[in-house]
Image (tube, rainbow, N blue to C red; front, side, top):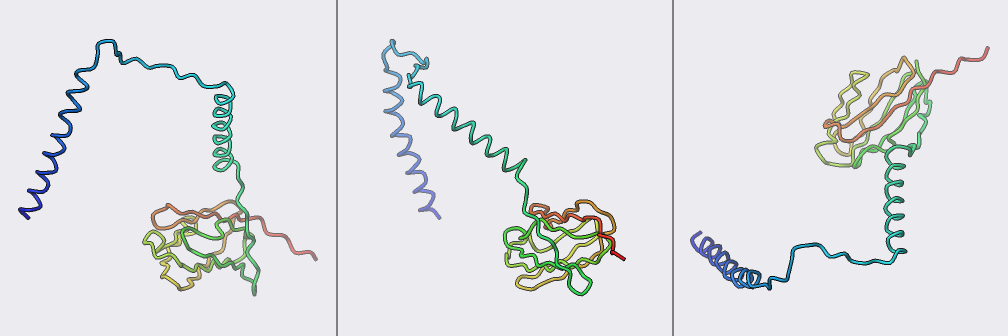
Length: 173
């Protein structure tokens, strides 16, 4: 422990000794030197290119976060239950699911990511809080009654998914 503190003191002293000559040189600068900025001339084409590149990046960012539509995946009807498998690996895949109102839904969550954030899935609109063990499929069942969009999240509400409930199609007689 003593050798560690002696080493730290020696390094600090060496740093201070190295800084002293640099400080003296800065203090001895000629009086003609001022602290004003000097304009650096750039070609007009370069200025325009940088500006257009920046605007393109801003546009791409706005599109990504505001206008990009996620790809919806329709739940498949199996024996009267709308069912879909969801992989939990750094998020939810798929994270946008389409189901019909008034029919039972089964979401089969398979957690592959061992981060503690993804240990549970919350569907607050349906009163569901399910624990997801690693490498085990956990079915979550509910019946959405009203059309609309409902969210599901991880326990920390960092990773999200959406369930779009569409009106059920009336049977033809």
